[in-house]
Length: 231
Image (cartoon, rainbow, N blue to C red; front, side):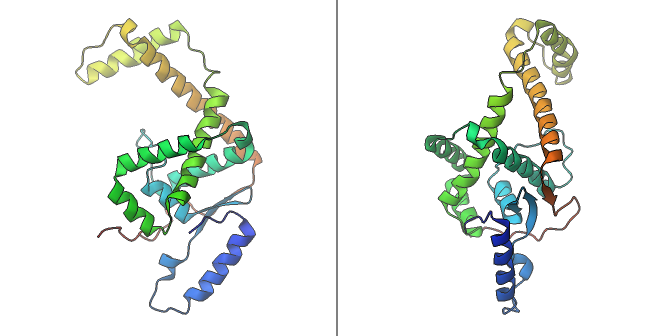
């Protein structure tokens, strides 16, 4: 099932599909008809999009442990991703080899058999999945191109991180802290990543204030369970 991005076309499709489904009293409309979760500058994000991203693990996990609802969390990430791609996708390019490499990583992570089961559940093929992977790569390359070179970390910041964060965290784990010179690059990378994430969040927040974003889902909304893809 190919993704439909034009808002007007999508609405017409949903209306026709809903009318067709009413002919089958034994089927659950909730299981058959897709749901529009958000519209970003007339680009649609559906419940199927959210579930595909969830099923294939195409999202950055939140290490803070503050996720209240996984669908709401993924939807917010997809809104940000869609918005940035719409605004800046022409500034970078994604090659077929990059998409194929990403696809191989996904297959290796979840397994070939599980991959095929999930594809069947969503009635999509590998080319459909590649579209999701391509968008994810576009997003990551745009962020990297805009922010990765702009973050500079001083030695004073590294030393402060080493004494205030690294050493206490190692002792809490019952480990002996390594000398600063051995973890210098690791600490610099951690500081850069944290600062870049803060800059990205601020940038996206400002973009969303000016964009036309309509969200039709909030934390606490019920989502019908996805059929299990078992033998």
